[in-house]
Image 1 (cartoon, rainbow, N blue to C red):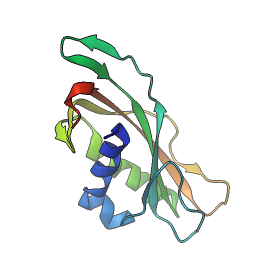
Image 2: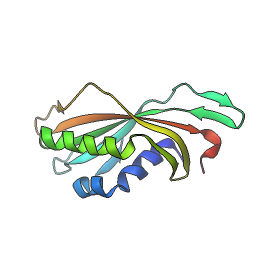
Image 3: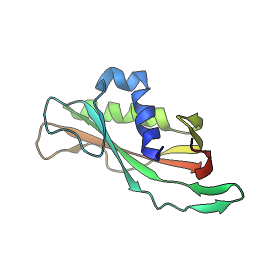
Length: 136
């Protein structure tokens, strides 16, 4: 299992988010069809992190960008807000990961119009802290 499995699992199992996007949640790239909105894509932006050794293994802290897209700036911002709520300050076992910390990071980007002029994106940065040997 990889850390991105945790991101997808969390998004697909949050009924507030899926009520808006359905199953239109993709790792890395969204399909080109304009009918695919609102939607979410996610990808690692910093996987190097500050990994360090502890007595039980290696602690990792990758950061992911979750891109929340909608046809209006308001829709994109609201989806980003809901994603932030879903991930902020979480901990516990999530889909086989013992997550020590899961924080939303400030992006400073706000809502960004996409090149096609038909879509708006709100980026949300999420950082996880977990120990390698706790992944099942």
